[in-house]
Image (cartoon, rainbow, N blue to C red):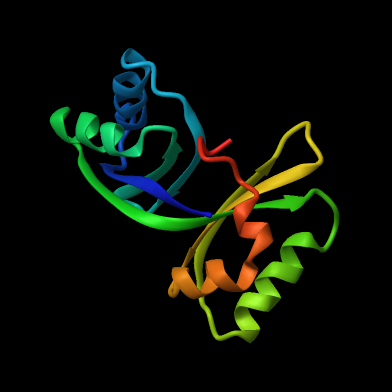
Length: 138
């Protein structure tokens, strides 16, 4: 399933992540998945939320630098080799995985969020696995 991801660009200093989370918490935004990547000076916080357009506006209005883009979400069986099989399929089709984040929690499935260079082709190729994620992003 193709979903929207919100990215927030932050100065890498104490308290900036808390500032973003405080804005989201005050508006009762429920974060469904999250990733933080950093360099020495800046970081990128990536969120999957159930109301991405509203959250993008909320964060912009709070003064943050925000970008929204499409990512591919998959539900995989939580067993050894599941992720490897999907990543190999993408690679063999010439689709580059730019980054991903994942989690498994209490269910039989693991959730994966992929950023790929050809999202429409990747979603079509992965078929049923890409369609298993509910509309509300879990």
